[in-house]
Amino acid sequence: MLSPQWLDELRARVTLSSVIMRTTKLQRAGREWKACCPFHNEKSPSFTVSDEKGFYHCFGCGAHGDVIRWMTDQRGLQFMDAVKELAQEAGMEVPAADPRAAKQAEKRASLIDVTEAAQDWFVRELRSDGGAKARDYLASRGFSDAIVREFGFGFAPDNKQAIKNALAFDEQMLVESGMRIETDDGNHYDRFRDRLMLPIQDARGRVIAFGGRILDKRDGVAKYLNSPDTPLFDKGRTLYNLHRAGPASRQTGRMVVVEGYMDVIALANAGIEDAVAPLGTALTERQIEMLWRMVERPILCFDGDAAGQKAAMRAIQRALPLLRPAHSLAIVRLPSGLDPDDLIKQRGAKAMEEILSEPAGLLDTLWEFERDAQPLDSPEAKAGLKARLLVHVDAIADPDIKALYRRELLDRFSAFAFPQRERQPWKPEGFRGQQRPVAKVDPAALKRLQQLVSGQGRDRLTAAVVAGLMRHPSQLERHEEALAEAAERDANIAAAINPLLDMAEMLEDGGELPISGSSGQLAPPDLSHFSFLREGTETEDAREDLAEAVSLLVERPALEAALAAATARFETDPEGAFAEQQRLLKRKLDFEARLGQMTSLKAARANAGSPQDLGPSRKPETAGEQETD
Image 1: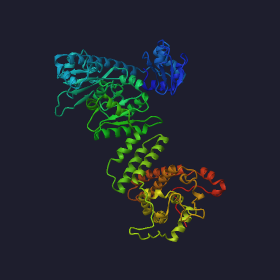
Image 2 (image 1 turned 30 degrees about the horizontal axis):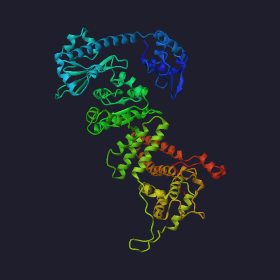
Image 3 (image 1 turned 90 degrees about the vertical axis):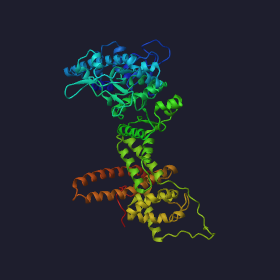
Image 4 (image 1 turned 135 degrees about the vertical axis):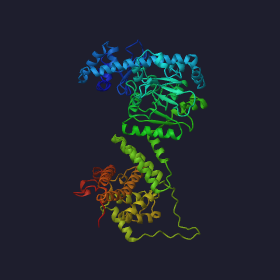
């Protein structure tokens, strides 16, 4: 018996289009292929092949399948013959038959006989006199007869032995299929009683489990009850309605994920057929991968209340480690207090379609949730926001996506925490018409700044930030709070930042600088490898890169102080100190990598004109090197 994992590996190793094009002429159509369908006669192509998703589909006749299905349906091979031919092509060895796997497959097949028979019985019970209450409930929800039939609604009577008496299967099979419960003392009773029943089907449309909803509210009784995990059913690997939504999504190009199966049915009742739902749990990693096989950016639709927001964040946290190029999640939050059914009843299906047409991105949702999670009325609270954002960033495995998320979230944090205030033009007159005195700066401080930005110190990060703020003094107010924080932590930074803040009123973007040379321009060649100081850098790009440099300048002394504190704890708490030190060292490596992104020796030499401009053995210092006299 071939395992599902082995078959998935076989499909992954064989390129579907290369197999199909041996007998069918394919034409490239974007990221997919198209052709006239080989399964029916047509003049215009409606047959598509997607290597990324691993299936072919004809929009004319509905032919659909993977590479194995192609070999059996188009080539006419038996299943095992098709597998053996593909395995030889992929360089895989077909595993020997496993008697235990064969026995398990036989058991699953027999249990499906149980669940299919139970489904037929539940449907008959809904139509009986005892199902009148369930039929009234369905009518109150506005579900059409076609939807009731399509989704297979049924009814379980309020009798502990009803299904045992109705189905001709032994007790053990009824228990293993989840239809009956066995107590510790050996007694048995029906799991579903006095409930509206819904079949849960696998990707092939076979009934593998059930969900039941109570019709009358009762204390201590769960509103919804699902089958337990069985040899047939794993709720973390199953998406409700996938077998219907999959073909629909190929028409719409989207997949909608809602919170429960009644939401799926409400959408289908309104004509929105490309919706699925998890089954009583948060969206799992396996379910996210299943969705990505259908579409690259499934839309997660959550209720607008606090519980819906938390559910969205749980899904985001599961998805972050899995993100890969072009694959993400889109998020829709409904108006507060409304679920999909309520929204459709109050505003119509068009309103639901409009909301689904404008989903938020994963990054936008992540930022808004953390920004609004708690009041940001103190520096400590703002630092907490930044820390939470970076925790999410650290969860991303793909290095390119991780770097892009870090940049975008830190940019948003800087713009939010240090908003740029409108600069008022400096006027020589005071409030009462008296001439305002020109700001005075200590000549010694001016000299120190001149030395710092001209490359006569070793703390090049501080020097670069100072030079950048002199070049773009309009950014001083935006970063004033962060710079003051860094100055409090590090005396070397304070020596450079304090006089700069004092002379802020004397500086103008593009104006002559009070410590510049005769040309009136500040062009420290030793710092030109910083991206925001390079000639030709766009102003907006330079300001954003400068904001990242300020962020690094603030983070550095805090990181070094934390490392020193962790080292000092070794005598009293060696295990805790070691763990903390390792975490901080990882942060320091990340810090240096971020600094390296904006400082390139190659770029510095190119801008300087020749390698000698940097000195014969000059190397960019790390962020941890401090200035010495």
